[in-house]
Length: 223
Image 1 (cartoon, rainbow, N blue to C red):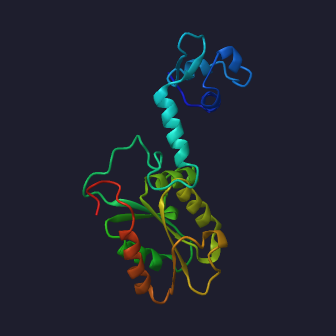
Image 2 (spheres, helix red, strand yellow; image 1 turned 60 degrees about the vertical axis):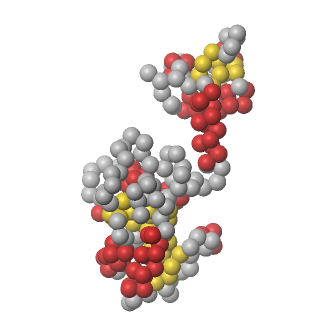
Image 3 (cartoon, rainbow, N blue to C red; image 1 turned 30 degrees about the vertical axis):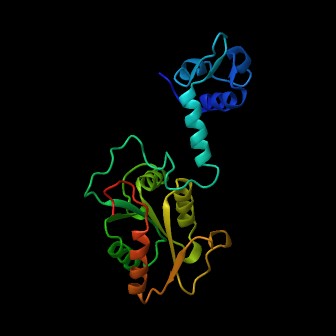
């Protein structure tokens, strides 16, 4: 069975530049004896030679995918969502991940976000009580999400980590923070964000409604 492991990744990287080569020539950097059968799906014999080359469609896929990652991926990143899960059906709620610090004000702000997120189901990372690797669960939830709301109030490290995962997947990230708290870091100030008054959450709700409406449609039936 073909696999896509670290050795096959190195093989694809090498053949991208060299175009074709023999297995004997490549074994100086391929450390696994299973690389040849593992790579069977990805390569084909070169014409009239004993060399192998990337299949044309595989080479094109690799080039296109790499081009999407030259900068931070956008919302059309091919691996943004789990490919092995079924498409969301019309009428299903879209998932929104909430990256927020655990503070006494969190419940009120969470309810405000949920009230503004028409058509979305909001999931907070601290609500995930399933057993297992917590960060892997966070990663899976962010992969499934169509938007991420990140509250940068007080610069919580977990929030920044989760927002970094969201940016790496090309997710639409809605950034908020409370007024009279440390400013948004310099390298994030080019992102649209909203500073809210925790004593006037109606203002935050109104801004969030507009922000959620700007989340790109994933399917033709999304509005």
